[in-house]
Image 1 (spheres, rainbow, N blue to C red):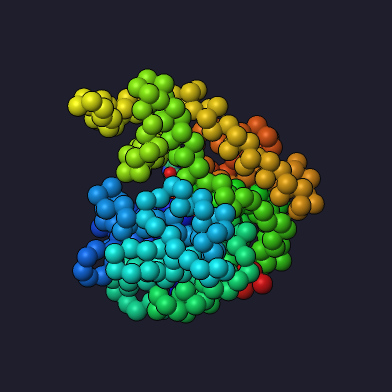
Image 2 (image 1 turned 120 degrees about the horizontal axis):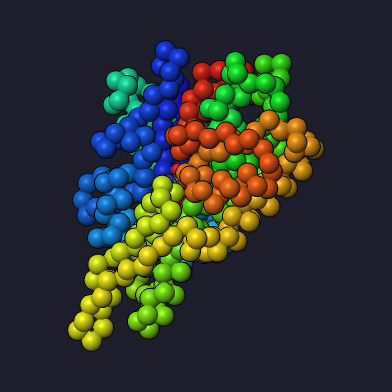
Amino acid sequence: MLGLDLGTTYSTAALVVNGKFHYAIDDRGEACIPSVVHFPRTGAPVVGAEADKLRVADPENTVWGIKRVIGRSLDSPQARRLQAGVVFKLVGHGADEVKVRVRTGDYAASEIAAILLRNLRERAQHRFGKSLTRAVVTVPVLTPRHVRDDMVRIGRMAGLEVLRVVAEPVAGALARGIAGAGDTGAPRLIFDFGGGTLDLTVVQHAANLVKVLATGGDDSLGGDDFDTQFSRYVANAVWGSHQLDVTRDAVLSDTIHRTCERVKRALSAAPSARYLIPEALGAKGRRWDIELPVTRQVMAPVWDELVGRAVDATRETIKASGIDPKSLSAVSLIGGTTFIPQVREAVSRAFGLPLDIENDPQTAVARGAAFLGAFPALIR
Ligand SMILES: Nc1ncnc2c1ncn2[C@@H]1O[C@H](COP(=O)(O)OP(=O)(O)OP(=O)(O)O)[C@@H](O)[C@H]1O
Ligand SMILES: [Mg+2]
């Protein structure tokens, strides 16, 4: 059975074969497929890394970030926030689910989600050489009931029978060995900080069951917000040096945002990085690069508020579990945003618990979903 993690920024399909995890990798050999759909003039939609490349050239017809608006209306805060950061157009009526308007027509958010899931299923079938039609899918912990239920219909549109819908960090707990031989039976906190949401859970394995003691998080806090804050910092710096307002140019804004994402990653690996967009600015027939030296120290205050919100949400979730923080055995960090040293340090400082870090935190949720598919009795 497939484990499918439909992510805000990346989606992954995992499968347990002979007791080992395997992924439906793409042509680049990557398990994390960009959650991006491009609508060409003719032919089928393009999905994943190929689509992501077309975001710069054809932003009106290249859709990303759709997970945040599944089941939401055009005037929801989620849709308004998405529209503020993208070039493609959102449309809708009243309480109906928001749609995207691209060159080939209007598509509801759940239709885009189905295109992504179908693509994962087809990649998996191709990779494993067999028909795969049953799946466990994951959703953020704060997903409204109707959206959770909707995953079954979205799965059907993608040619899948969805047997189980599980919260992302609960799946993450399974991937991090909560039901494994090395587990002590002490409760554990799973801190899943992805591209679009922060998902938290306190779980415990006892009597062959994984018990969820609390869930929490923030459904409008993720790596995308780190990129947005970084973009504001860049826009201010450009205004300071050239008195040019880059936010008025939607395509340049998108390029700045994408470059922020890249440089943010570089800063996870090294204390400083170079921010460069050649010939990005133009006025009176001249062109200038956007070039800024950035360091972890420079970014700390830019991201401080976001990191603080993540820590506060975590504190609340631990409180809701009724467990004394000291009796938690560890915090398992999953999701791509936990690569950021500032995030790790803040979590470590706030709770004084051992951090359980893995080198592939972005595939943990899909792995956990596949694991639950193989051992469905672990969670009631
Ligand atoms: N090395 C890194 N340093 C900092 N951030 C990173 C790094 N690698 C990935 N990210 C960020 O992690 C996020 C993606 O993580 P992940 O794949 O876990 O999220 P997702 O599943 O798409 O989103 P969500 O679970 O919120 O729906 C992106 O914002 C990406 O920029
Ligand atoms: Mg995720």
